[in-house]
Amino acid sequence: MQINHIQKDIEAIIESLGCKLYDMVFLRENATEILRIYIMANKVGGVTLDMCQMVSEAVSPFLDVKDISENAYILEVSSPGADRTLKIPRHFMLSCGERVKIHLLDKSDFEATILKANEEGVWVDTIPESLYPLLYGQTNAVDSNAIGFIPYNKIRKAKIAFEFH
Image 1 (tube, helix red, strand yellow):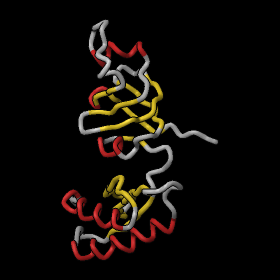
Image 2 (cartoon, helix red, strand yellow):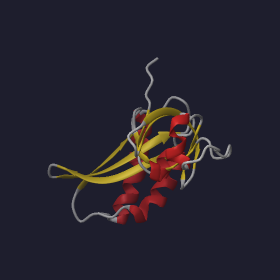
Image 3 (tube, one colour):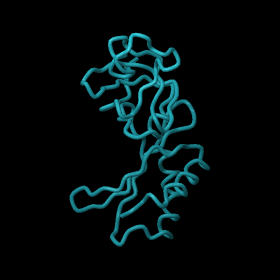
Image 4 (cartoon, helix red, strand yellow):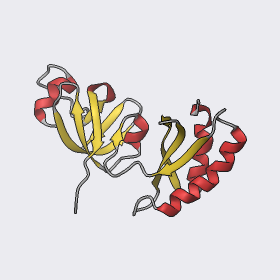
């Protein structure tokens, strides 16, 4: 099933309910096809079961009309989780202000807070000085405007650094 063509419509429905679309994936588990929609709350407190139910009830009739699959499938709506992996620019953009553990291509890793993100990369509050050559080239003079910027093509993996309180 191809779901990219309906993403903007799904996103509009979800935003009208006070949430944000984090991701949509269509997958098969055993013999069951599943359309899994991950949402984030626009307010403090995170995603609740009531929010998931509300989104599911609003999105389901839209999907029925769009007839997105020849086969029967299950619609699941949930939170991406507190320790979610950031894979695409959208994930980084929706995670501004959060603490992340970043693994770079050279297998080094560090924790930082996401300040902002765009389609090219992410700005973080701190980068260990030892990583400057990897990120900014073999120069002693690092442009002060570039400090804190990491292009996505230098990131092997990034994940929210879940903190227990």
